[in-house]
Image 1 (cartoon, rainbow over the protein chains, first blue to last red):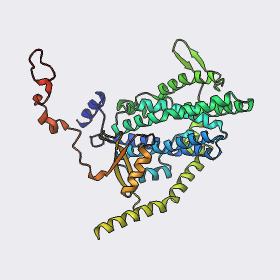
Image 2 (cartoon, rainbow over the protein chains, first blue to last red; image 1 turned 90 degrees about the vertical axis):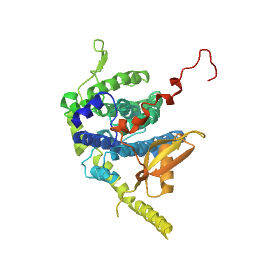
Image 3 (cartoon, each protein chain N blue to C red; image 1 turned 45 degrees about the vertical axis):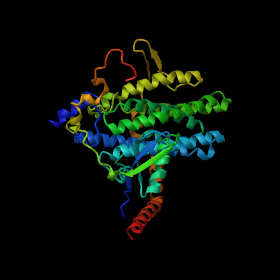
Image 4 (spheres, chains in turn green, blue; image 1 turned 135 degrees about the horizontal axis):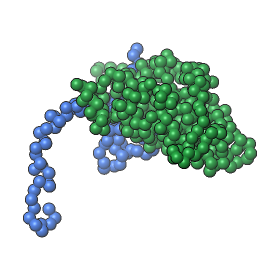
Length: 308
Length: 94
């Protein structure tokens, strides 16, 4: 009865709000997806933070700082949306530290050269934007509003990355080689960011029925690839996929097989930087404990002053 | 000591003269921190000229489900809208 009313609401494109009745599985699905999204924004600060002190110019440094600060902001918007489902920030962080909540595997790859800042902005943020633009229409109100805000801010991220790639690709032969190398390393993990093929993605059915997701993994991946091929061509870089070919009939690019064994290895903790990323997050959290305690003590003192 | 801090709802006036609009929330242990966190989180691109923060626990909300009944009293009062009235042909500035 409730369930039918809920589905009617979803089918007529009305948003679900925090106080509305929702199936427990819908709530759980959202908590898992939104928290994973939030953790990705926060962990994603690390590979880029790695280059702030070594940015090649003051302009590049200011931009990278602003970008990393935006990622922190996006993480907070998403934690807020997730908390409306009845889970606390503390629980969410605990789940991350216990390995029960995941974050996007792409951030478990190291950033070896400045060109990687270009590849991350162009490809990783580019892929995230394709996903997030689609999620603006998600059925859960707070998540949808968060996505709208994030998309507005995110478009500079992709442009700054593409600018770096374009500059390096038209620089010295060594610079161009660095740009190509970054593209080679980030291409496959970027297109795997959209997740497994639809046939191998057990949760897609419910997510589509409840309109949490509006497009499937494969649809989003295809859209990203179709957009990106031309961008690579005009800056003279080569996407590392010999099978990449325009398919007139489909009106899309065909592309090669993704290495899902590597994908699952990285998801399950065997990527080059999984331990480093999580250890750093835990350390930052523990190191910040005294600040949280001091803030709490100060707030209590203020209250006591009013009472007395 | 519990580490969960208070949640504050954030309202931003985008330009002098306009109404404050809800934009989201922040965690903070006191009001100054709430204002500063709101500034850092919601006005990184000159979005505001003034910020209000109020503890979420003080917000009282009507139910969004079954909201029809709550708003029912205004449904049948079309005469509150100017378009309800018949104006004589040719009447101007009214």
